[in-house]
Amino acid sequence: MDVLHSLIIGEGEKDLLILHGFLGMGDNWKTHAKHWATKGWRVHLIDQRNHGRSFWSDDFNYDFMAEDLLKYFDAHKIAEATLLGHSMGGKVAMQFACTNPEKVTQLIVADIAPKAYPPHHQQILNGLAALNFSQITSRKEADQTLSNFIKEAGIRQFLLKNIYRVTPTQLGLRINIAVLKNASDQIGTSLSQEMQYPGKTLFLKGEHSGYIEAGDELLLQHHFPQNTLVTIEKAGHWLHAENPMAFGQAIANWW
Image (cartoon, rainbow, N blue to C red; front, side, top):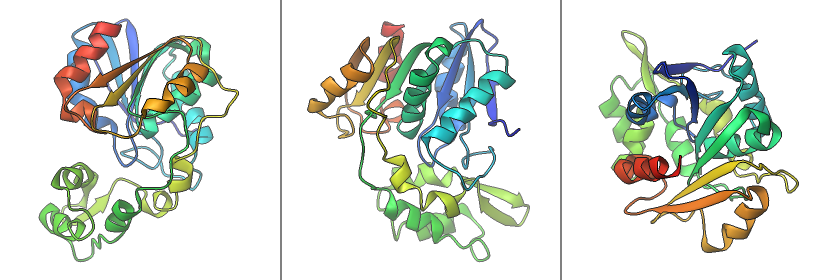
């Protein structure tokens, strides 16, 4: 049985499972995890399938990713936990909470709604697919290639974290770009209409992000009747990295 790779920080009695976004990895959350570990949490920084150090598979949608999480609970003998998911990870967390509510004590969703989104990652995916590691031998060279597709330096730096040394002389990508470049339709799908999670839920949206819009409150209420929506100022979609202090404080005020 394939079990998702994770880095576990802290030895607290309460489990907090963090699910990264599309093209990310658990390591992106290490700073937050170290802080929460000091507050009594055992924090699981999980790499989802086709990401980070977890297994690769041609099968990629939210049903498979929610099933991966259930296997992770079982493998680590976790009876119940708090879930925190960002973007794609937020959708996995929402689906898991709705289908396994007895395992989720509370739910935190960062900058994503349970609605459908049109494909919008194609330029990024084209840039990653253009990385030819038979010719590229450094992150600087990879950044130069990506700059032809992605103008924002911050997004490129985020993506470059996926590069690692396969051997001392050979670079590679931790993400399964062959599968993910065709996954945009799956990433954008909505939560099924009948799904509901009755537990305590926190939605966090970036002030400058358009992922959660003013008209989405009714949808949040339909699926998550115990939800609270908080806006993180001076932040966009990567709100946990763009304003980490406000992001962490909003969560601290809530739980």
